[in-house]
Image 1 (cartoon, helix red, strand yellow):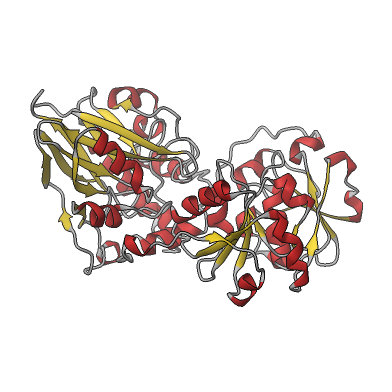
Image 2 (cartoon, rainbow, N blue to C red):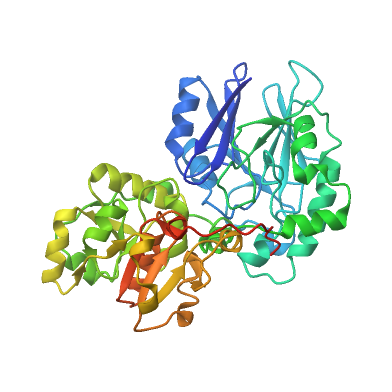
Length: 466
């Protein structure tokens, strides 16, 4: 058996190639849209990708399953569990899977378990290498069981707005986990996400674990009381990025052919951006953005959180142009944006083009960046853009708290006409928030470079329960 794990740091997403050398075939589990990595890996191992599958309708990235099946001619296998709201579009060429179904790659048998809780249609693949043993070897758990955590059951309510689904989902998840714990302790667990994912609250960084170890250490598997589990699994979950609802929609629909993808090129004339009513996304380092940028442009630096940040702030219904330091960065950004379905990038501009935007009626500005002790808070509003759990643990008593992803929705809470001193934890997210505020029309903005840490405040000894 050949097993390869592919990990996207920005999405904190894991996908897998499982191959049988004797049959010369492989299956890809939970692929993202970086198709080349799967094609190259299979070719290097002398394998053909004959099956592509996924554990559920993903919320945090756009699945590459349809496109990979199109390129390879592989069979596309997806869940047929859940109610009518959790079915794949009938136009998609696919094989539907239910509880008790099995598919094979040579001597490798994959048994399908219906494992609802995170989502109603979620399935888990139990792998048995029949050439080696009749006992199951591993479970590809998707968003059911992570290393150190379990999948959150509140996304339907928090991200998709389906009111009243969080608690019933938590109870289904508890029952699913009780069944899952009956598998042999030696079985390996290969989840779809790692540390940093918003699909749980305390995911570990290890790529693989065993069921026995997780039963000893994973809080979600140690519970035997349903009521206590429900309360704990719903408490303290991170804010789901705004794009999650869009992913749930797009991942059920038929996709345009992968052969229609267009690679955007470098642009020179700013009128192209204007005529297309394009959103400007500046992906340069934040120091460059703060020093000089186009007023109203959005900003997300090409760091580990880039994809999630972009998903929070970039609209899906407008063309996009990038400001990037070079072609390598532009290509990197375009690839990451495609991972969450932001396919509408029409091109990119180099920093030297920023000046020419002024001649086309755009305003070129810079943003002051001060340390916390340099900010005159009595002359303005201190705006805390961190997540809720961060705010609960420590915050300035005079601050207004609006998480970065909710600035647009809650802009009426922000005082107009006052200087806004914007801070996060350590200075990474606040420049992104500055760009969102400018995009909303705010003018007098100061970036607090050292974040909450610069105020030397005591931490609150408290646990977040909301």
